[in-house]
Image 1 (cartoon, rainbow, N blue to C red):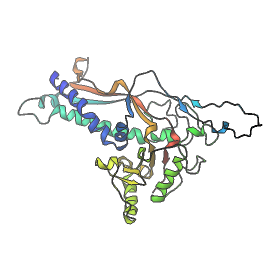
Image 2 (image 1 turned 90 degrees about the vertical axis):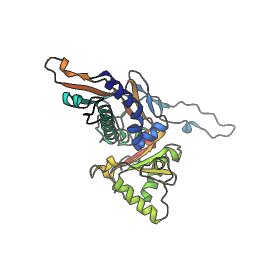
Image 3 (image 1 turned 135 degrees about the vertical axis):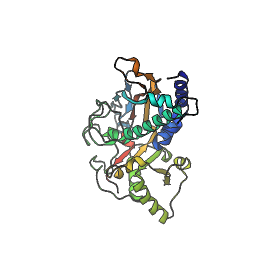
Length: 332
């Protein structure tokens, strides 16, 4: 393949990927603006997170009381593995010869087409990663971790075990009733459900309402939109709405529709409340959605007359404080 095509494709990919892929997914758009999509090297992703406070050690006393002294374990050290992902892009001999960079016979702009197809493929894959069903063994599984891995009750996360209220309840996703057993309870998509979800997740952390995003399927978004219009509460003044996403604001919290959640009846009932400062998509600098140059496979014995390039990713999506966010699986 001509070297100028490889160079053109690579330059176009670098110049447009952030805008065409990352910024077109609502939650990743918000993370990017808060600099929560980072590029950092290292052997593993190791965190130091707070799990307790010193309030219980405070003492009220009169002058003749003995003063207490005690210690308390304040921190934990979750660890996350690097995950690997790649997307192959192939061009066969006919495609290459029929679409040379110059000539009246060119059918498509090959560099532009390769870039667009790669961006669209990665955008769809990133949505799948974020919203995929909790695997239950995601710390050791090869797949990227998503919102459910952090927020579904119980099961290891970041190598720390979780069991309802008895083991590391501080590391669970937020719970409506505090028992960590109500994620699948059937709830109606209405204003009260949104307000109660904000309330329940807020008791675990001090938060700015502008740092909260609620993600739902378009089907549920329209239901809530109709109720808010009836009560004259419908507003589209949030950061995502201003960028053209289907979004509205209630009590200072932006609610956004993600079309991926309308893919089937199970996903359509999902509701995610995401406290953005706690989440990070970390990427390794050597595989930061890197597009390799196309290599002709015919130079290998028994190879084919095809050019192959790959989009390479090494990273993971993780949460520093799951109990400030919430996942509901049965809202309709």
